[in-house]
Image (cartoon, rainbow, N blue to C red):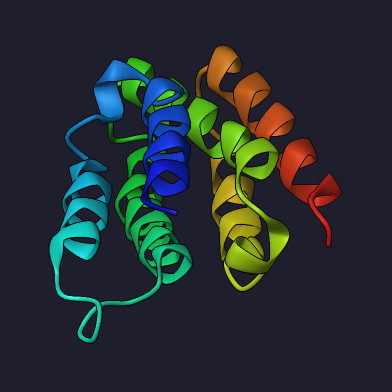
Length: 130
């Protein structure tokens, strides 16, 4: 079971753009803590991953606002676009309305490249269903 969690974490970390590594470092910490704590006190690996992904979303969503550098906005949108392909719907279904609302703001970005990335990301999240 630990090997499966580590494999899932590896897939997530490999898909994260370098600009976002600091923003989601909490995932690695929580998963590793969950794997090393005594079995009576820890969450299941699935719960640990769920908490880590929600924490990453909490940290990445504000990076899409137009006051951040364009490269960071594009990296956050790329990360959000990759989540529906890698995370089961049951983990993120409660976050879907919030993500779509935040993506609506990204659609008004002054840079055309960011708006295109936001449209692509929004389409990934609209199609994301259980």
